Structures are given as structure tokens and as C-alpha cells.
Length: 519
Image 1 (cartoon, one colour):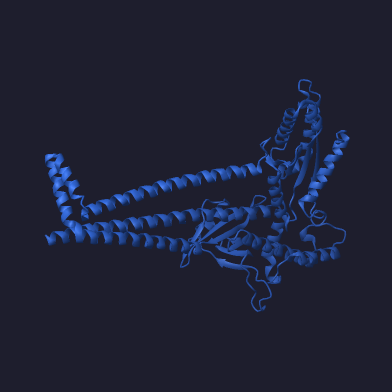
Image 2 (tube, rainbow, N blue to C red):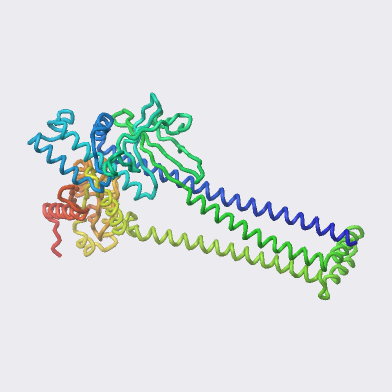
């Protein structure tokens, strides 16, 4: 009998041990790989977005960038640039001084081209331009919290890469760390860097990254081909190291496995000890009774089992403990489901509140809060980027108070919504905001910025057309004034200056329309 007990206990313990190890290990692995895959996708999205951002900046000044690259590849060994630069303004001022000295009264790109400039002026221009782009790449790296950004010029015949813009500065030899090293060149064989060369040869933005595996973890690199006027010039490289996150995910996973495993193993050991000490005989008897019940289907056997489970004996305690554990688990699952549900509801409310904060209740478009956020974005792009182009259009509904007083506030709301619909239809490529009771603002960029005169003319024509439309109700024949102002990098220190000029232009238009408020 003792041999049977030991054999049953051994088998039972072995099954529990194997199940526990497998379940905990699989759960830990699933958690680890799920978190790793999620983070990998996020990393790749981030470095793609950063590459696209740098590409947009370059394409805004693409002709000058092409000249800059051509001069770099021909003269980088002849140029000394300070290693510790942190602002390109001094180099810009030096170039402008030399240009004025050698080419007084002329304008670069208008009546004199780069190749016609004095060599000293060319070199000064190159120094200023290289400092500008080096700092731009470094600022992007810091702003987006990635370790490395760079620009490569391939030499495909020998599979070499020239680091034209290197976000990791290197000092020139024998310069005591004072001169920046230019023209850093490495051999990148295609078999080792297939994604890098595929991006170059195809000229396409690939849906994959170059991955390096090393003792620290993984490094992902994404390459954005730079194409100017149909010609491939180079690759914008962005990299991210996931060593720290990999280690954190692995450490948390191992702790989770260790903690859960320790708890489960402890429970199994305690359970086996109880079974070995007090319950084996009753379990055997219980098994015999169940077998007998299966054979004879005698209900009295159920009473025997129930009787054996009462009286405070070990099997009854085990049954009660198992029942308590099941109830506790059930309560825990119910509590978990309820908590998850409440969290989901709270998230939905938070999302709804966030939308309400940025949405105008009457018109459904974005409100003054959203406008302020958009202006902060525009002003960030203004910093350090002279090529930024944008404008602001101010639109004000005329005679709203007269409509409200004469026909009622409901008709006044109809007039506001009708004007909102017209503004959104005409400026359909720009964000429109309701910033006051009868005031709307439009942030003009890209195509709407370039075609603003035609859009304003279309707006005024539509206002005039409605004024002559006898089929409309009086409050539907809306009258509105529009004013437009453009960002001037020389005079404007913030978007607020542009807003004030647009508001002033709108007010002048109101006076022309004889719609200036007197009430």
C-alpha cells in the first residue's frame, strides 16, 4: 500500500510539475514576443516617420541641396569646419559678408549662379549650408529621441557609402578635436547590407528595415531615398537601438515567470504534502466508490461519498479547500472582467471628452483650443527653417446680431453653420477653426497657400451670389468678410503677427462692405 501511495504521489507530482513548467514558460514566452513584436513595429514606424520628415525638409530647398552635395563630394577634403558648432548663424553671416564683398548688388539664384561665384564665397556658402544641415539632423535625432541620423551618398560601383551628413560627429585627425572630419567613407557589401542597397537601387521607400543583431540586442535602420528632379542623390538613414527596451522586457518577463512559477510550485508542493500525509487512502476509497457507482448506478453510493466528505476529515477539508479556491478564482475573474469593462468605459469617456475639448458644438469643426494647438505646431516648424510657408485667413460673419434680434438665435445659428460649410468647401485642403461666435480662421499651407488669391475670389463671388439669390431666406443670404496675411520670416517672430494682419485685413474688408459693427 505504501508503494502505491508513493507511486501515485510521484505520478501526480510529475504531471503537476510538467504542466506548471510548460504553462509558465509558454505564458512568459508569449508575453515576451508579443511585447517585442509590438515594440519592433513602433520602432520601425518611428524611424520611417523621421526619415520622411527629414526628406520633406530637404525637398523644400532641393535645388540648393543638390548644389551642396555636388560641392561636398568634390571639395570636402579642402574645408575646415569647427567640431563644436552649435549654431550656423555665424557661418551664414560670414557667407553673406563675403558675397556682398565679391558680388555686390547681385542675388544668388537670380542673376548669379553658384558656379559663377568666387571660390571663397562658394566655400563660405558650403560651410554655412553644411552646419545648417548637420544641426538639423542632430536636432531631429534629439527631438524624436533616436540615437542616430545621417545622410549617405552611395558609390555603387564599389559598394561604398560616404557619410555626407553624420549625426555622430568625428574629429579630424591631428586637429586636437577642433576640426570636423568630413567625407567619412565605409565599404558596405551588399550581402551584409541588402536592405540599404535595395533602397538605393530601387529608389523606393521599402516596407522593411536593415537589422543588425549583436551582443546588445537589435538595431533597426531605415533608409529613405532622396530623389531631386528625378535623380537619385542619396539615402537618409535613421536608426534606433532597442537594447535597453529588450533588456527591460526580458527582465520583466523573467521576473513574471519566476514569480508565477514560484507561487504555483509552492502550491503544488503544499498540496502534495497534504495528499501524502492525509488523503491518499480516502482518495483511493473515493475512487472505489465512484467506480462502484459507475457500475451499479446506486444513489446510496453518493450518500456514502458525501458522508465520507463530512465530519471534518482530511478529504472533506480538501474538498472545501478546492471549492474555496474555485470560488476565489471565479470571484477574481469576475472582478477582472468588471475592472476591464470599467477601464474600457473610462477610456471611451476620456476619448469623448478629448474630442469635445477640440470640437465646436454648433458646427462640428475644430474650435479655438484646436486652433491654438495647430498654431503651436506651425510655430515649431518656423524655428530654424527659413523656407516655411503659411498664411492665415480670417472670416467674420456680418450682421449676426441683426439676424439674432430680427429672426431669432436659431436662424443666427443657421447662418453660422451655412458660412462654416462654405468656408470648409472652398478651403477644403486646409484646417478650418471656429475661434469665436461669428469668427473663423483657416491655416493656409501647401496648395491652398499657393492658390489663396483664387480661393478668396471664389469666396467673395459666392457671398455676392447668395446676396442676389431671392430664393433664400434673409438669414440664409449670409454676408461675410475675409482677410488674409502671409508669414514673413524677416518680420514675423510668431504666428500671432500673421493673425493680427489677417484680422486687420478682414476688418478693412468689413468696412468696404459697410458691415463694421456699431452695436
